[in-house]
Length: 242
Image 1 (tube, helix red, strand yellow):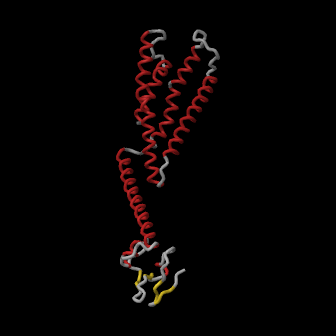
Image 2 (cartoon, rainbow, N blue to C red):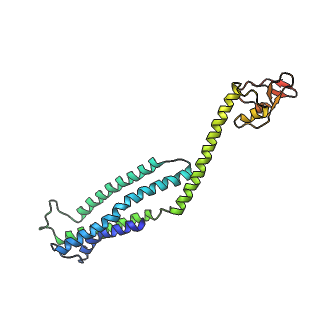
């Protein structure tokens, strides 16, 4: 993508730079029209691809951001890009107005009355100065380190994390359903270990069955779950739970 930006920007400013260097065909000739529009047409092809590539890169950045923070933030990332576009457009218009004032470009200018020095300065603004501004922006482009292999690695790690989170969510949902089964008595006919194993985040086999009343007791207060009317079995007798 970096070379696409470089190529398009070089071609976009080439006619003005050549004119500033007196290497462009003379004004009013058929050759000048062909060369100018030919260069601009070629420059417009890669220049049109740049926004598409940048938008696709923003999605890759969202994947990396999710991997680093655990949060998905496409809206925030694309809003920052849109703000940067608006800010750069406004800053560019401001610099252009300052530049026209600096070279003393007249209002209501006519080509017949323009000073050749003003035209040369205008060509400098649209050629070499344009290259200088673009070069400063390329420094930010070079900070983009994501490539195809790294992005594929990020996608694999995200897939593993999402599957783990989904499995954990299903396990919690299943535990809640079984918890309600224990609470409403629909667990009857199952062994204490099976009933205990149905409780979420509860160890297996931490229940006792009283030989006399056949009721199910927890082995300790730590094993007693809130919301379940079940006494604690301690030292051979039932202890009421809080």
